[in-house]
Image 1 (cartoon, rainbow, N blue to C red):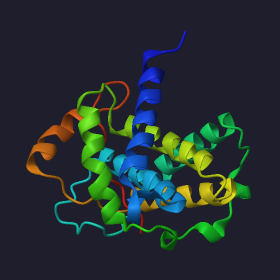
Image 2: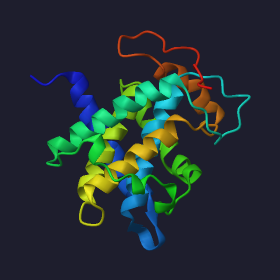
Image 3: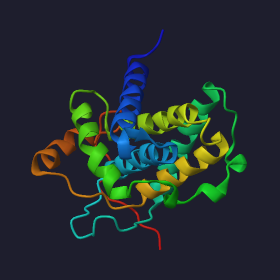
Length: 207
């Protein structure tokens, strides 16, 4: 029997996939492979960063902030990506990824534009779902694999997966841009771990 939590993960993955296909388009409403793959991965990283519950009020949005949490949860996002790709018929390992694609220059949209187009619609979805922020990040990682599969004719999976992993790292180490007051009030209810307890209330930075 399929668990309820897995059903929610599948539904959220499909939602992110549709959201990215609809919102991350370029001139003329065209889908651009690199922009959509990197955008979905950036969303995954940003959502995971928000789950760290770091007090970012004194930090400039968009600045880079490396942390132990980013390293640990980055591995989770990569595992989800590669596992989903295997289910879609793409057998890849981290060693097989093309590191030449680890660059934001492949995207037609800036990171902040991805945030502006995706973050609030995703938070609106979460308000109607039992999933928390980390669950949503994992769903976005799975959606990134689906987009890699969709765009395989335009970008080889070994290149696209490298780009997605780069996007995870960007999102996990970039201070999120602020949300409106109504969203700020809603965030605490989304910041619970899978067992129902509060997430860590601090972030351990790396020198």
